[in-house]
Image (cartoon, rainbow, N blue to C red; front, side, top):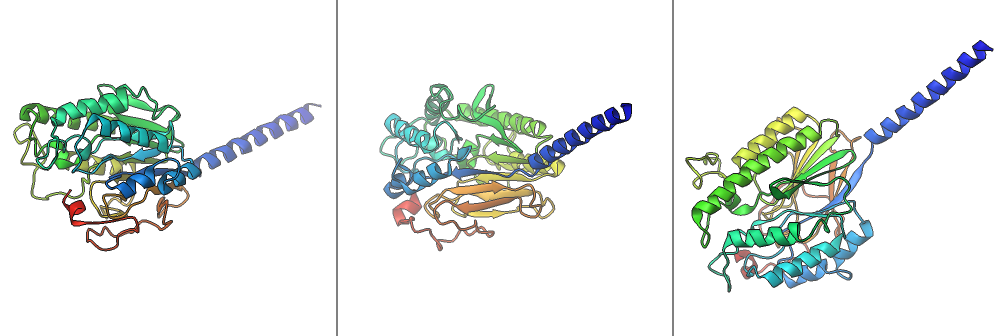
Length: 353
């Protein structure tokens, strides 16, 4: 009788162990997909593509029903004035694309460029930043993100977000173009604007540190922001207390991401917009686990990207395809004026905006 009991208990143990092993194997091999867009709409055609329910991009997002849509900022072209009414309309449109599962991070067109001389109505950029925060983050009361489980925001810097969709940890950082808000300060108090830039750098650094701490047991990390931090002047030093303007506003964050990715060793995907080159590549030959996606948009490639993370694919863990054209993202970053998508009505006026 005792022998049968031992055999029975051993059988239960082996069965449970096998089930646990299968569960762990399934979790570690789990792929996820999500959608990214940014630097649009800049034209009426692009606006129509994003308008729910009939716009082609809006319909494709609805059909896919991704667990998260990341908007990389620049929801308007730079030549349009940053009025309250315009901001509210774009908030409405963004909120309708993937209801309650959308994370937005600000771009330079959304606030730093609101003081330009070519605008019919010019604004203080810091005032627009405050309004943007109020509309998209405070007043929103988590409506954009309420169905993303476990999403948290950075204390004292509400636009930065962090969340996990197994087996990937995501974060957004507020890194806008215009040298990270350090140049062309035309209507705000310059010292206040530079203080804001310094505080933004400090907040982003703390949030990136927290991201990698939270990702210790994750299979991959995804970092999203607006500025193309890889399009930079190699001769400029990092910004510092002694040099706040004649400097590379992205060097500190670029170096920190590079260092953290090298330590992490598992796949890291940096996603940004800001420039016209649409591509997926590895920016550093010595860090093969770090990938960079320059997302479509900015007049040239008018589409959203579907991104799939497949932990079983060690060589290319991230695959990126267009929602509309279903083509893979190019591996070469092409800044030329050739190769536009069918929805790119590129004009001289568009190029100058």
